[in-house]
Image 1 (cartoon, rainbow, N blue to C red):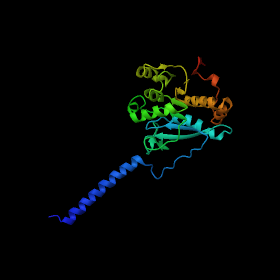
Image 2: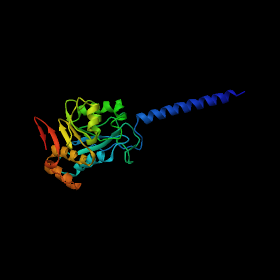
Image 3: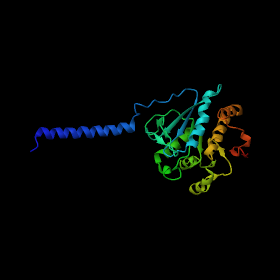
Image 4: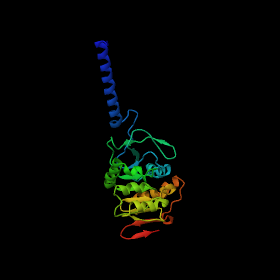
Length: 255
């Protein structure tokens, strides 16, 4: 017969293991790991959040990130704090295989005020990502409060699912225009342009042309000279007049 002491030992061991395991899971989901260092957010800058997830495409992330991050090297302007936001503290893996560690977990962290939201394209933005209710709700809330919201390639599908593009003109990756119209028949969708600017929303065709959409927003915020200097620093020829785009205002301007 098992002794009373042995039964008591096993019971206490199981209790300890169960409690320890439960607490560990809770901590993983609710607290920032010790190795994380919150990014420096300097005052008097625009706060720019990049929404990332597994399958994010490199170019749609790095193109606008490069443009916006380089504003810190320009004097006399209100530059940008750039940071990455995901629904996890773990690294995410881009479609091309780069492992990226987010700066914030939007499910757990208190984020800085977000002035500009950037939604790069990701592998599942036409299907399973659109069923992520927490992500869509977060995008909707942040998008309503931000000064500008930009998407690249199929990032427009996320903005559309969040209802942010209703009553606005938009575009997306050229070969996904038909799918975009089928999924969101209520939207005014344009093609044969690299980006569309309507109100606070800038949607772009994506790919390498994500640079153009980011430079356009820089020109809106800082003027032509600063935008050209940002482009020159990355060896990009920038001339807005030669970029097919659509600006919706009191009247439409197709260039």
